[in-house]
Length: 379
Image (tube, rainbow, N blue to C red):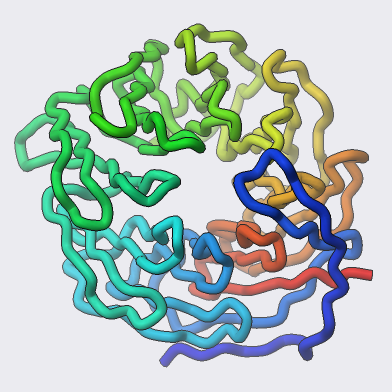
């Protein structure tokens, strides 16, 4: 049975507010200068929890996990609204629609869509699977499909109707690793073990550019302004301590403008700052690095972990950096590079650590099958 365990009493959070003009909506800055405290633990999972996923409005939380079910949790209380069952395989990817009204889950060559927070079945789209992504305006869905014995495909659908707009066959020769949209929805991209990052028109699904590297292309991110795309290249997911590099391309021209080649043991994390001025990398070593965009020059490093940095991301206002390793996460001041606070999140493997979109909560997941929610201490 699922339950919540409160660790601390509720307290009033004093918030500082300011607008971040580069984001599409107002982000209210949270004072994290004294770190975070745990306020709820969500338990009851029988198999490994892979990743926590917040709804865009920060009200709900769901998990990509190896149990054959999905929960919709209330972030403010830690209570489960509903448990969704009936999957044929474990839902490897979970995502919310941009308006937070729908939840998407994978289930053997299909995507199941559910109403939020009721968990009522809304629609099933056949012939598409992970990785998938919904456009920022919520009008399109792009995802991978590989029929048995067939070539890798990408499919573009109208969303949430599920009407097929384009079936892009033989799109990649090897495994498709990630599918992501740029911020304005004009493009989506797919990365692959075949050594390419391909850009596609967001409305038609037609090919726009092919960025070839000659090495496996893994995790990639568009800059918030859409001018650049950065990718981890050369990584072998089946091997540890393999050299990797980051390549930064200019989207408009498809030109490679910078190659960062200092990761002898490999890379785990990659993220742009909300203003697009910086790129952070988390490597298979005890540090994260901050790079200038577009020059690719090293700005500063964040050192203090005992194990390699597998998670690195910015707070929505860009003031803080969140890094995670096998057992702990650290909150850093981006401007000074100073450590604000470190917290032990688990005695076993930490599988994800992420800010909620409003920056008010941090969620951590681990291989001990628990999910912890943390709030800022404030002043």
